[in-house]
Amino acid sequence: MLPVIIVGAGPTGLALALALAGHGVPSVVLDGSDGPPAARPARSLVLAPDVARWAELPGAHRESAAWTGWRTVRRGRTVDTDAFGPSDAPRHLPQHVLEATLRDAVARQELVRLARGHRLTDFEQRDGDVLAHSVLRPTDGRREENRQWRGGYLVGCDGARSTVRKLLGVPFPGRTAVERYAVAALRAELPRPDEAALYRGLTAGEVTVRPLSGERWRLDWPLPPDEGLVTPEALLARVESTLVDLGEGTPPPYRLLDTGVQVCHQRLARSWRVDRVFLAGDAAHLLGALGTQQVAEGLRDAENLAWRLAVATRLGPGDGLLDGYQRERRGAVGRRLRAVDQALPLVRGRGGLGGRLPGRGRGRLALLSDGHLGRGTLGGPPDYGDAARRGAGDVATTPRV
Image 1 (cartoon, one colour):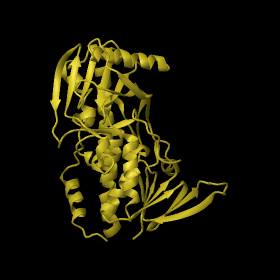
Image 2 (tube, helix red, strand yellow):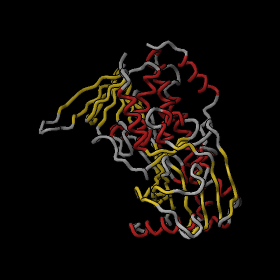
Image 3 (tube, rainbow, N blue to C red):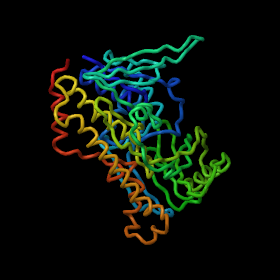
Image 4 (spheres, helix red, strand yellow):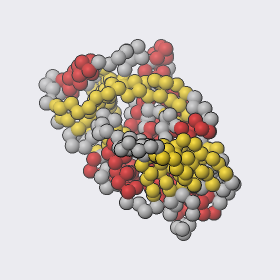
């Protein structure tokens, strides 16, 4: 059986390799990165219940926070609450923790070969297979080493600047810097340690406060479109002002762990499949505004594509089997992006629309939480219909090769 060649060893590529191995399909992961990502607690992700099982892997479980609830507070008054049980709780963890966990799982999986230091340079699609060309990053003064890899299919999971997408000539249209957030991760004892919250009307304006594990928190402040560079002093002022308000005038002791600015883009590749080559994750789409979760969408890509490639590898592609990946996943992400476009003028009041559109009360505030909570058009799991569910079930009963 020819392996599936996966280009990129981020969350989507590693999850795809593990999902394929679960179906008995081997893979080769070309990892052209400089190594595991740096520990950045301010760069975190939320996994909705339909993909939360990835946070249950050994290593990620103890580092992920399962929220017990969500609270929306406006001008000091709680206007909405949600409670979660173990089965429907969103899971919040740093992205570097998930990636390290996936790498450990891949290292233990005999059906996955991780080719460290190999950067894709080109590929050829032929009748029945794909031939990928890579260059091994030189170390210890050695010269670059060229290598060829033969596989049944190739999947580009190689990020927003995807080499695979560029080699295919697939356009990547969209919008840049749809939203920006000032972000801080800190350690502190805050009220309701297992509950996330959205606050509006604080001294620093709007802030989302989401617990991580171990008394760590991530705080996000949306930035006005006309605000320029966020200086460390300005970000620290936001942190301290917010803690004063949360502590009702007495800020708790805290330790600042990490800061940054999250810039949210909206892009969608025109095509996610060209014959035996596919795109997934950041190579296929970018989102993040209004709490939409890019990593979660990449994991959904991996799960949807894995079973299709497993069936195609064993039984042949069949009519519409592989095209179904683009139809379902590109359609789902496209609907998510359109939902963001429709919600932004309402919740942010840009262009004066916030004062003219209906639904400015509880429904408007819900649009600021749905992406985080995995519900509604901004965060809920996609519905692919009965045909897709039957297909995913079919591969589970197929004997592994």
